[in-house]
Image (cartoon, rainbow, N blue to C red; front, side, top):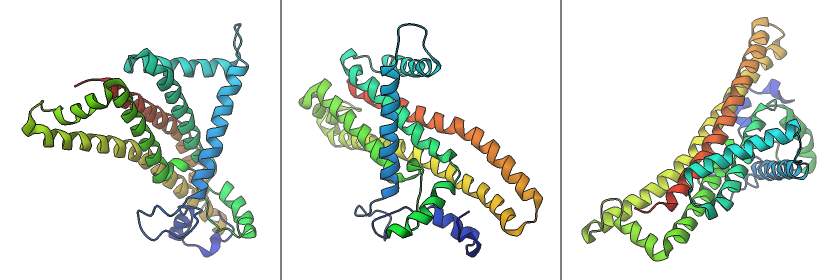
Length: 283
């Protein structure tokens, strides 16, 4: 619990933990002038850390019997490569797409794994450092529970898909496809075809980012509720059932959440491969 948790209600505690460290107060749902510094910091830091892990595995790779770390990375690389071969059949495209998919998986897994850090550990540290630095007393550590991060990732995938649409089909071929698919190359169907194509791009991009955001946001809320059980016992000193429930629920949910964070990283990676693979297909 935060140091001033005694003055907080349950609702205030949750609202405080769901506030980002921002450059200014957000006044509307969509405000592109607001910067979430905590999400940027953890995304950048874990991105660098993930690259370092993969570089370390490549640097220490040997042709002999691999160690556990090298074996784990090799299994991961082989898994991603096999999925890429099954979806993206262009060998030249896979030279970029397969490493991209590997990066996406590792990066999102590390971002998701921050949900396993005790909810008050890093915010408590920032509670002491932030005010001393003149910064607001807010900190969220799960960047994938920030919709601006997940939508940014999905828009990045959209840009890659548009790039391969033009590269594989040519600018003229892709523009023709926008107006001739899915209902046929008839002039009176061009507006309908174009509208359906735009809806498809928008729907895939929004669902891609929202799926990851929704799952991680829900997981973060459950960890906060579990933390409140322990906090209630610590503040009152009564209700041993709260303490036992806190330990049991926290342990069970953490174990289950390991599956969730891995599955969400895998799903995001697979959808990335599927969308890029669809960019190679001609209608």
